[in-house]
Length: 222
Image 1 (tube, rainbow, N blue to C red):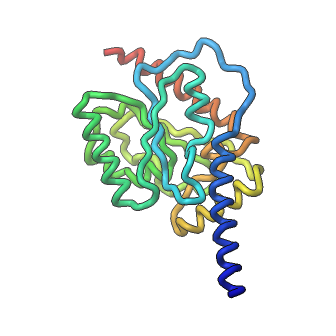
Image 2 (cartoon, rainbow, N blue to C red; image 1 turned 90 degrees about the vertical axis):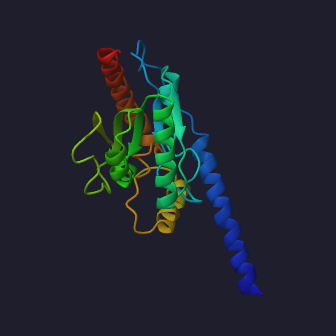
């Protein structure tokens, strides 16, 4: 009976940890003046979610999307299935084909692990809807092959600033996330914009990239 009570208490604690840390990341705010006169992209920015688990499922990209949206960019999310590779691939293929059929276009943003995961899909489909790919990478735990070996779409990599600081509970929850997805090379919290010490600097790198994409859209302008 004592063992059962202990296991039940542990289960309740882990559930509370997962819910509260996901909620805490979603509620993080930043006080920063906006950069004026940003050139905006013609096509929306599409953030693709990487692999998720119960300990990291909400607000995958943390402040990045809202930071760009507050500067005037049109931002969308493609929320793929949490971690099943076949379901994730199937959903991405379905999405890309539907966007091509609808003649929509966008700039795709994903982390290195996700880009590596969908390398073959992007090569085989060569979707017209994807105007560019921006890879968010970090110096820690970077996959050995991330960027498309022979880019078929305009592509650039943002090397985010690393940091080992941050909330103990958020880092602990992310460690459990890594444990559930054991063996997969996941991005760091700093890469995903979840660490306060570096999130604004990394968000500014993404803003600079967005302005470069806007210049590209302006040059192409058809």
